Image (cartoon, rainbow, N blue to C red; front, side, top):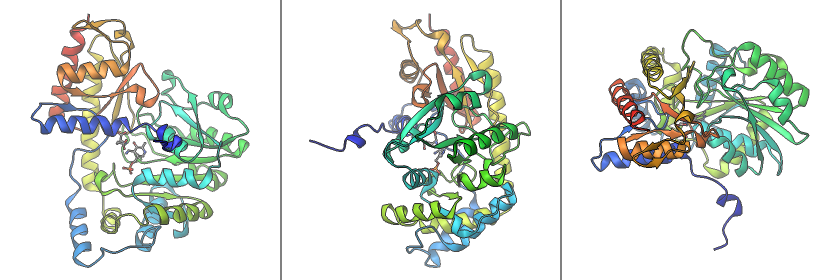
Length: 397
Ligand code: PMP
Ligand code: GLU
């Protein structure tokens, strides 16, 4: 069959694939520990669940405007003002089926065939594929572990061309857990101004930040940065609402309008019940969320201290989100039960096979020397999972 050449070049999301595999093994009665997808293990807070039930009972079960209900967009505008010191009118805001759809919409709205988009390596798995789907070319910007894998202007200068249309920045970062400082953001904003490129700022982990680090939106750096940035955010991570599929974007009203036009044909509006539930979530005082963040921080500290004590691996200390990247390259060339470990995929497959622990190979993020562990899972699982990883690594010779 002669199918779409473009579609055939798109890889399935490895984060979702491994998570689905671990869930499948569990349902078959296999005792798997999953460090796969970044999905909070907490249930959505009860007051949000109740708002969804009320929405259904009150008949909010119909189509809404494609860009989302006005009340929710207004509440999102209030959130931007309160948390990020950003002023947006509701014509500058769109609500979509997850932050994923916002990113897809914005890329479709701004790219012409052959336009290039700068992406830092390691990257979240979906960025390159979404760029390709929108007929753009992902341009991978190499970064350094010593610098927390963050863009430097030197690295960016090497990758920018006359075809560069946009840069994606993700802080706090998936998979590295790095957080950009105000100075670093100012440098990137200045670079974007000089090259006249659009900034796509994925801030979905904004609230998951530790060590008194502060989340700063690059859109708040200057008037120019405000005008050229589309901010992406959503409910999935902060409110433990991954399955509700609710994300939002804010920025230039012309781009937002194009995004809304595209969305009106692809999915129409985000789920109406999720929209009403999100309205309630954003209005509510966020004490349950503080509890979740504290818990993630405890797990983060525990994981780091355990990993530091396992011979042969080293961790990148995360400042935000809920992932730890572990360098496994010292184990390459060595064998477990006669099978040589040569890359992150090989390590991850053997670990799943032998010890029933699911992790994401760094190859999915463009870095083969690493694996990623999500600590959005219970402390009990983390302890057991790390015991098994330690046993697995001690068995490599
Ligand atoms: N951006 C990043 C960096 C992510 O890790 C995720 C996780 N799914 C998303 C965007 C998309 O989130 P969602 O579609 O669930 O809102
Ligand atoms: N973003 C999360 C992750 O990286 C969830 C899975 C996905 O959407 O890719 O694990």
